[in-house]
Length: 107
Image (tube, rainbow, N blue to C red):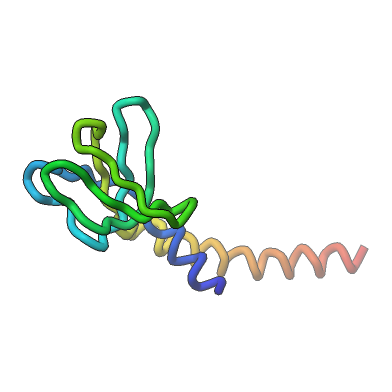
């Protein structure tokens, strides 16, 4: 379970996708920015010229978003920096924690 949480934190929505060029693909994790200022994260179920259907990550329900209501779409991709920084931080924190614990127990 902790590995799953660790890997999820290594993904970020950084790559802008051109909807009109067909860059949005089925089963892709996306963040959709709507014209009214809201955003929705989810997994793409279907894409056509009129709408994008996603499984909304918060409610696990299908949302159909008309293309005319979309101002932008970003795709999820693995962040190499986060992938190495998080485990390295954990590995560094463990010995420091034990050193501090030993120092406190000697007092």
